[in-house]
Amino acid sequence: MSDSVGVLGDEPVAERLRERGVSVVTGAPDDVPGTDRIVAVGRAATSAAAAADADPLVLPVEAGRGVRSVARDEVTDAVAALSDASVERHPVLSVSAAGSPAGTALFDVTLVAAEAARISEYTVTTPTDAVGQFRADGVTVATAAGSPGYARRIGGPILAPTDTVGVAAPIAPFATNPDHWVLPLAGLSLSVERDEATVALFVDGDSEGTVACEESVSLSRAGTLRVAVVPESRSRFG
Image (tube, rainbow, N blue to C red; front, side, top):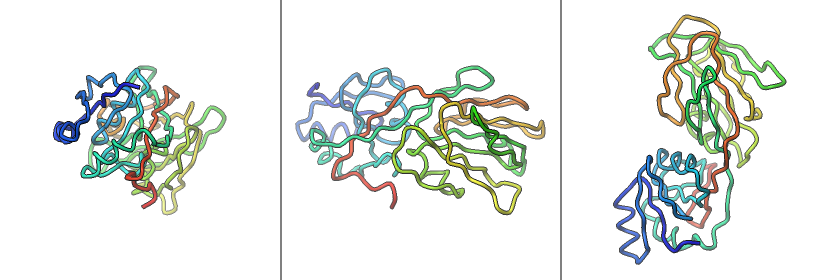
């Protein structure tokens, strides 16, 4: 293992580690360090580390409960504990829209009406089941890493670490008792069924264009992110 630690997303964190004698290589979301260990500050940096070609051990900082983030003021102690860290593995998803690549997702994939107070109709399907069809502002699919985030705020459950299933949840559905589903991620598909509103696609919070009526967004397994869990890592459940 290289002695250097990559720091992605925050120069002050890199400087704090240097002051403690850590050899640091800095990077940016479009230029991920090629080190064996990466400190990823924030969700965007953690997503970028997940999409990198290498297979680093990632210590998420202030990136949400789903990836057991550490607090910014505990980074130096957390890095010192990396040699004894346990590892959680999270799926990285390849996202395609209408058959064209639309990015990779560590946390969630969302279809939502681009204009306020507009709804559309959506379907959720797996390779073996037509799961649900509903009218709503949108729909989100979250991995276990993303399940304590937006999906939880709209009623979905928090998942323990798993690389096989995720949560699908309608956003502001036109129903009084909406369903939420825990489903296999591989082959999961979201479709827009009515040409009533412009529907935007977001992958880990980044806008990836729009999805037209009768077009589908499909998920497939692209890789795995190894997340370091140290004593400073917070619980995903609280």
